[in-house]
Length: 431
Image (cartoon, rainbow, N blue to C red; front, side, top):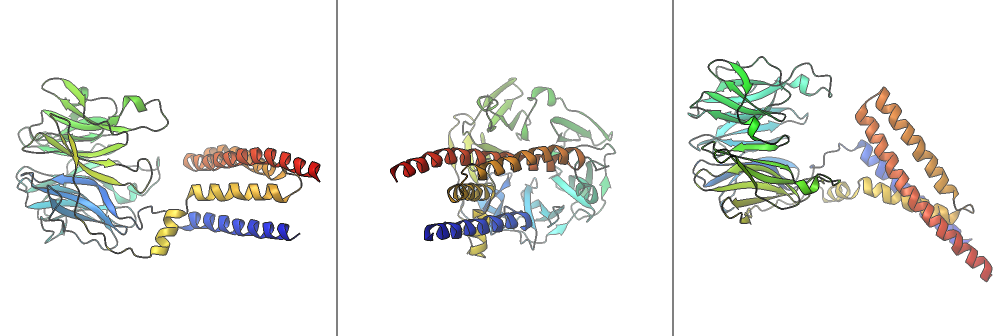
């Protein structure tokens, strides 16, 4: 009797922990970066190849930093207040930086500042959500892509307006909308002064905007790139492009791996530069050396993303990590940080499985907890189709994933019940 009371107490504790975990996951803000410290996903290299600009999280707040090429002389050059700063871009003379400031609603605004962070000024309007920007060659004009903030906040399929190109003077004057055509997205902007064009990526197309004729057309680069590419960037001479793409060996696997590739337009040749089996993002060409900086996501596909800053020699493919000399500030709310990292879907799954196993031991009909769990899981599968059809496809996928997790836990419970039943029979025979 004492053992059953103890077992019942354990069942109660596990039930409370599972309920608390579910409650936390449902009502927490869902920000995986709330307490994160580490590199962000964007970086830039100064025209003289001596200064790196990058974003870095300190206890969940992302700011712009600069450092020397070897990772020393780290300086914080932006000071966000309840927002995140990211995507730095150097001017052609290296004296100024553009960066995006993301507010708590996810809306990004464009800022310009001196290289040391002094004199930050907002260039875009509050009603705009900016996806990327680039300086003109003379540094006097900034070209950027944006969509109305109210449209960006709408769910997929509800938005009525796409992205457009804008221009604005470096002092914030003479803001102009350049394009009329709605585009899915605009990023990887490049200003070509010699041809008076803006190159940019729209989904998997490379498009060009003629600044004189005010028209968009397919760039000749599109036919020279693969069907699926990401983080496209060009060499200073525009004769090469670097991008990331899914490696061939991971295309048939459950998890895609993204490697770095180099396309030489003069030789009509593409070569793979990395074999890291993770995910490579944000390649940046050196201006005076045959090297590329990039970020390797060593935590792929988990979040928060954890990046290493890498430098690769294009001739030898030799790589080395650049260790940034950043001293992490003392963690705020260490208890909440521990809870945030500990409580996740795996936690709930383990607690649910443990609860099923404890109930299997406690009840006389050992298969009863597993059968009830199976019934709930099957009802959840049916509910996922109803939710997907009647409410939202993504919500339906979420319910389906929950049902799949319950089925996995139930299978474990059935196996345990089968083993436990034989253990009980053996104990009864011995009695």
